[in-house]
Length: 221
Image (cartoon, rainbow, N blue to C red; front, side):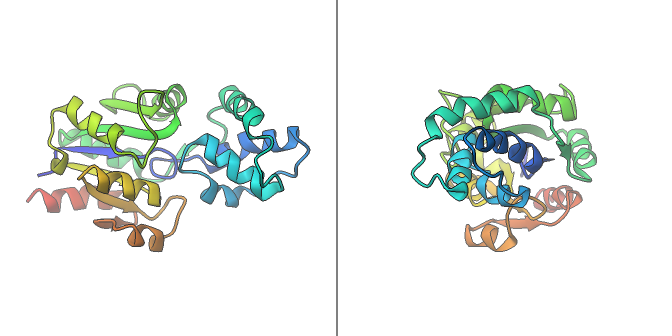
């Protein structure tokens, strides 16, 4: 019986790749590097902004990360100045969330995006009442794929981990959900490929948001 859903944010609920590229490319330009194409950020993102910056710097020519330490606060500043740059929910996401809400499913967001930014983006896109909890990256919550964030949400909801569906679009998400002992679902509309989700042992795949509702109904029969 699935009683709650935990969603990744970037690439799962919202199309944020242009926002990620926009913020980090500003940092690359600051150091004299050529901005990287937006599509490359599908593979730089997913493990937190610091690692995304490290990957982009390496691709731009700074393979040793000489500018990483200085670049992290710069990147955070650029993100903070315009966190909703070209950010939008994927088609069908809002309708899917509404249906889950009507069914009484508890819902949370677990993101490697900085905590305040995660709250701002989620509340701006979906309002303040859609999700029962939003958790971004913070000093007391290790980044995914460490499962502590997901398990903390389970404790907060007072719901067993096997009664929670964890949904994401990257190998990091699959590792997070599986390590937490949750029913882990890969979404194929996000940043990464179906093959990556399968190789990292997704319990199921969904190709459009409405299939999340259908899968939940099937599991709860």
